[in-house]
Image (cartoon, rainbow, N blue to C red):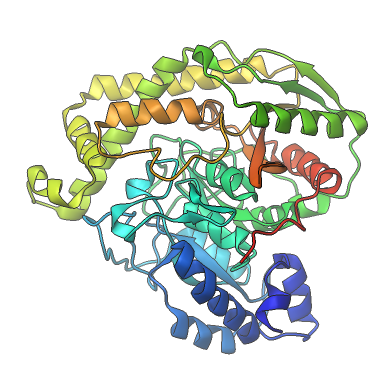
Amino acid sequence: MDAQEYQWMDALDLSALLRNRQVTALELMDCAIELAAERGVPLNALCYEQFEESRVLAASAHPRGIFGALPFLLKDSALPSKRFAASLGSRLLKGMKFKFDATLLERFEAAGLIPFARTTVPEFCMAPTTEAVANGGPTLNPWDRSRSAGGSSGGAAVAVAAGIVALAHANDGSGSIRIPAACCGVFGLKPSRGLTPMGPARGEGWGGLAAEGVISRSVRDSAAALDAMAGYESGAPYAAPPQPASYCALLTQPFERPLRIARWTHAWNDIELHPACVSAVDLAVGAMRARGHEVIDTPPPPIDYALLIEALIDVLATNAFATAQAITGDQAPDMWRASLEPALYDACEIGRSISAARYVSAINTFHSVGRRSARHLSGFDLALTPTLSQPPVALGTVRTDTDFRSFRRAISRYTPFLPICNASGQPAANVPVHWDGGLPIGVQLIGQHGREDLILRIAAQLETDLPWKMRHPSF
């Protein structure tokens, strides 16, 4: 197999070729590494490459798990790996080493995924675009290199959209799977809180906001990856509702009844939605209604969006400070200034000063939002929203040369429908149903807690009716 054959196949198709001995794991790894050099480098999507070591692993690999022995990428989000250093996109944390593998990584490898590099992120994974100084320049959108690839899983989305890998590790604390998936025209599911493991070194991320997952080219690859990832981890502080025997097996099953879907196209605080983003929702609505589903215009949950954003800022800032302090030890925080972007240095300063009472109040705000959201959706199977308020923004639009509160408040106007799902712990996915002026425009599906099955099944219908598989950026 050569890179031209490899580049647009999904993971399950590649796995089938591997099991039928039509291709070897080393051939697949060679294709991924070739494309990583040809596309990943110009797009600035990869870091901490281990190409030769990974070729050796692929050469001796025996097919196992769902995927057999496929090339894979880990996000530079400090997911522990004995093989790969990490930096969280920060000069301050550059070259972090680990003495153990994360539970999630163990599950990826048991499923037949072989990591060969990490993917780029913004500093501390706290921006909706991947332009960290530590990366030596911005990560570029393959559809338009003057535009953002999204963040924080920007490198992962670029690698999938560019054909380097069929799926890549990603995670989401306030939209970090869904934003880059929308910007790069690929599928990205944020799982329910407690469904995928966070350990063994920690039980939660960002006060329960974060969830681990993947970005993929096809819905079925995300379903298969969820089959591999999902399941309670002993000692974890959260547990999702019981999961089906196989998410992947459910994709072809017809619905027992038409779904009832809430359509949200009015954001909180009069945040303006670009017409192309609303048009994407309208396309999805037309496809859903053609399938017999009921779509009803409703307002979003009655929450105080500004209060939610302030709570998010407090929790992110506290975690920024805690992360920097844990890595730098006894080093005085004022020594960090030269190694952090201004907004992130300010985040650490805010985090250092936040009281325990204010932090508890922020967590309570998340829980309140979660309960209101669940009640609001109680009469619906899903909600449908624009993923972003605008098409992918130009590089340099989101700037870190400001204070952290202004930085995050500006972001909140770009991602109005995303943080609510992190606060509530509900699953949500970007589905790339529309292109406008050559740029991908996604819609978001939000499910009740533990109902990834419904999101995946209706996303699979949208994939059939509004296909994106044959849409590829030019190289």
